[in-house]
Image: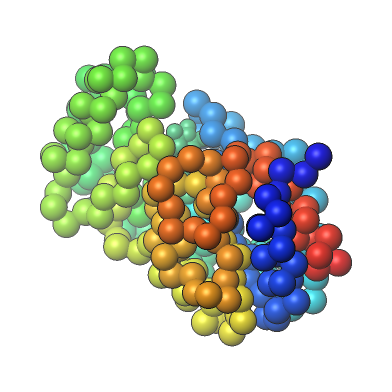
Length: 247
Ligand SMILES: O=P(O)(O)OC[C@H]1O[C@H](O[C@H]2O[C@H](CO)[C@@H](O)[C@H](O)[C@H]2O)[C@H](O)[C@@H](O)[C@@H]1O
């Protein structure tokens, strides 16, 4: 049975007639359920097919807009359709970064490493334009919260803080998903945008949507999105319904 609320289904039906149409989605927590090991975060069953059907519609562009680096996003997702891949929260727009930000990123990693090493279960992810302090596997939840606070306080003030689910990212650019979605919209001349997201960083994108657009928050939490579904499985239902409407 479809988990698409009636109001959302009606809004999708209206929006499906608009062209050019941009359908953009976050990855972790939307197209892939959250798991302990980021390298094991694979798409939910049905995502690959639904995205391919959406992207096959005339005048429709699918974009994956992730906090992950583009190379990591491609590798972990295995998604290989005619999609726009935007990584590092928008810092990687036209493709992977070529290392120009590596110096500042490495300095941030050096600063965070001893803090992270002191908390069992915590780990540091080094990405093209940021470092991410992960605490999902920290059993002591008070210690996890304390580490995120400590990491934020210890970071170089020039870094951009991007809090997320069991993670604090410290980015060497101020790129965000809102800027990325606006840039995609302009590049494509999109008449309307659909955006699916689940986390704090997706709110930058939701806030950039206008009255002709449609934002879908996946899961709990405050949001600027106009619509909500319960979980990544329901996000697949949204994509399937959109594919049906576009077909
Ligand atoms: O913008 P997204 O595509 O949602 O990426 C955000 C971050 O996702 C990954 O971390 C999150 O998912 C992990 C796998 O499910 C989970 O273990 C972790 O707790 C989450 O924060 C990824 O590791 C980060 O680099 C992304 O920025």
